[in-house]
Each structure stands twice: as structure tokens, then as C-alpha cells.
Image (cartoon, rainbow, N blue to C red; front, side, top):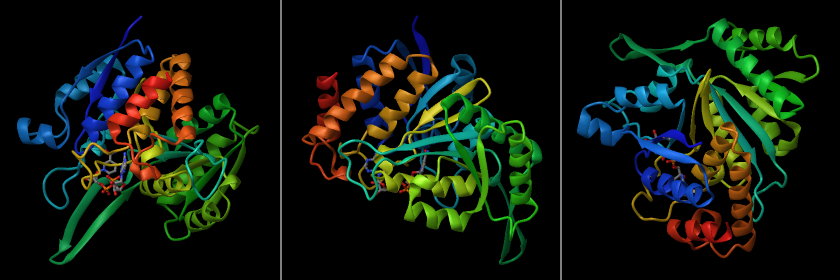
Amino acid sequence: MTYRVTLIEGDGIGPEVTGATCRILEAAGAPVEWEKVPAGLGAFESLGHPMPEAVFASLRSNRVGLKGPLATPKGKGYRSANVQLRQGMQLYTGWRPVLSLPGVKSRYENVDVVVLRENTQGLYAGIEHEVTPGTVVSLKLSSREAGARIARWAFDYAKNAGRRKITVCHKKGVLPLTDGAFVDAFWQVGAEYPFIQQEEAALDDVCMRLAQDPSEFDVLLLENLYGDIISDICAGLVGGLGVVPGANVGDGCAVFEAVHGTAPDIAGMGVANPLAVLLSGCLMMEYMGERKVANRVRDAVSEVLEAGTHVTRDLGGTANTAEFTQAVIDAL
Ligand code: NAI
């Protein structure tokens, strides 16, 4: 069987890293046929919309997508295409497994933390307005339904993936209603999963504990903005943004993408690390039941990283994107 997968190449380094990923997955025998759709800055400039209806139509039909990063112009322009996609397809869980990789130097060894981010609400609801000239407000949205929905996803995930503990992170001391609702939903749903350890912790406390000893945590559950920030902190624990995969998952649809952005400072130079998108592709293979392909690629990646001769600049090496890609294909 061949799977049809929606492919969004993305902006900046997007085409470089998704191109490398497609090449490696194909070399590993992934039974995938790509359906390329335009999105992001390129689509905005050529079609007038950063997230055209064609993307939604393709995802509604294929149910699985691989996505490069999309640029969000600062200030005026358009509303984040990523947010539009997550809200439009109700991809309510941001799933970001953060794992130490062999051969990648970082402050800690054996980091294994999963960050789960609520993708549809919080300050990303984008409800901002000017109250009086010079004074603006941004509203933070938090519904019991959305809190319960992601809590259930988190507990089901923990159960199926054999994870031992979930920590829900909050600032309910200052935001008792919004963050309070998120935490209440967690405990309510958690009552049905007594075999999984459960704790709540203030976000600042979590930041400090992550810096001191990440092994204290197993699965972190956070609302939208906190999840965005903590994902990057966790990426820093294992070697940076170039190595952490992710996915945005809803009921019956998932889009796989790296944690990092379009890296405008290195876009077009051919030096980006495609590993994060590649590992997102491995998660995608697993999601589709192609565990063998995923593990073949991961083994090849480990071999290249351990050898250390073909790693990209962000990991202290000198290889460019094409050289790293070829090394992984050779290892396959
Ligand atoms: P960024 O993640 O693009 O870059 C931060 C730093 O990490 C840069 O120095 C960059 O060169 C480096 N970096 C990122 N990915 C890398 C890779 N694969 N290999 C080597 N180095 C890498 O974050 P920034 O600069 O804040 O955002 C740039 C644009 O990306 C913005 O328009 C932002 O909105 C967008 N963005 C999109 C995301 C998405 O589509 N999921 C996520 C984060 C940001």
C-alpha cells in the first residue's frame, strides 16, 4: 500500500529540510506518495493567502501531512499560517518528544521528555484589540472542553506509550480562571487514569527544575504559549532546535513538523540541519504503522551522528545539508 501524504515545503530553510527528508524517507523505502500544496509566505505572495483552501482539502483527504516551517511576518501582514492550520484542522495537540541523540553533545545525557502543548487556545486565539489609544489587550482563551480534550489525549498517549508520569504546568496563582480551568480539567480526566502518576507544578518551578535535572520529568502538559516556550527550552537540553521533531495532532488528522522556524539567517545557504524534520518524518511513519521504516532511518541517523564526520554546523560539524543527507542515505 502507498500512502498519500500532504507535503508543505514551507518558507526559508523549509524546502531544503523537507527536500532532504523526502529523499531519505524514499531511500528507506517509505511507501509514500507526496501531494505538494502551497502555504506560507510563498502562497501569500502568489495566491494572496498563506493557508489556501487547497491545504485543508488535501489534509481532509489524506489525513497526514509533513510540513516545513512557515514564516509569520512581524507586525502587519497576515495571521500566523501555523495557527490557522492548527485551528482550522483542530490539530489540538502539539506533540514534541525530546530525546538525547547519540553523538550530539549537550549538557545532559539520557534526556527523555515529551512536551504536549494545547494548540488551539490561550493567547494564540489571537483576540487582541485597542481599548483606548495607546492601550491594547490580548485575551487568553481557556475552555474546559479544550482542557479536557488535550488532557485525555495526554493520558491516552501516556498509557499507550508506557510513560509513567504527567506534569501539568500553570501560572494559576496569577491566572486562577484560565490556567485554573486547564489544571482542573487535567485532574478531572486524570481520575480515570490512576495508574499514571500525576502532578501539577508552577511554570517557573518547572523551568528551574528542567535546568537542574530534566530526568525529574516524563510528560509535560502545557497550554499554548507555555508549551511553545518550554519546547524550545527542552530542545536546548538535547542539542538545539535542529534536532527535535514534532507533530500537531487532532482526531483523525496529523501534521508532522519540526519545532524550529524558517531560520532566515541561514535560508538558501544549504547548511540547515534537516534532522528535526527527518525525525518528524520518522514519527509520521510510526503514526502510519510503518515502524520498520522509522527505525531504519533512526538507526542510520544514529550511525552518522556517532561517526561525527558528517554532522551539520549547528551540531559542531562542517557538513552541509546535502552531505548530511547523503551520509544518512549511505548508512541506510
Ligand atoms: P528559528 O527557529 O527559525 O531560528 C532560531 C535559530 O535557530 C536561528 O539561529 C536558526 O539559524 C537556528 N535554526 C533553526 N532551525 C535550524 C536548523 N534546522 N538547522 C540549523 N539551525 C537552525 O526561529 P526564529 O528566528 O524565531 O523564527 C523565524 C521564523 O520562523 C519566524 O517567521 C517565525 O514565525 C517562524 N517560525 C515558524 C515555526 C513553524 O512553522 N512551526 C516555528 C517557529 C518559528
